[in-house]
Image 1 (spheres, rainbow, N blue to C red):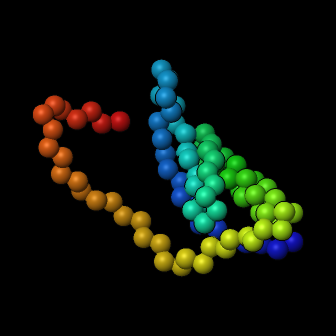
Image 2 (cartoon, one colour):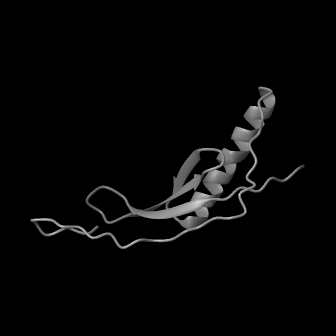
Length: 91
């Protein structure tokens, strides 16, 4: 069995609803796939299964399988000045 490696971006999100529940969204930029889980481990497990299914489907259909050669990834944050007439509510 061959192994392929793909970058994942995982972001924490407060789930909608009355209960303050957390969800983790996992995104694979090279394949344009996303999935989620109630924990980081579950999100990774779910997207790993999705990536595997996606690649197997591409191979079955005779399509090219994208690879993830981007060795340079920059993750940063920015300070954004916001001028509002009302107080900004933070999540």
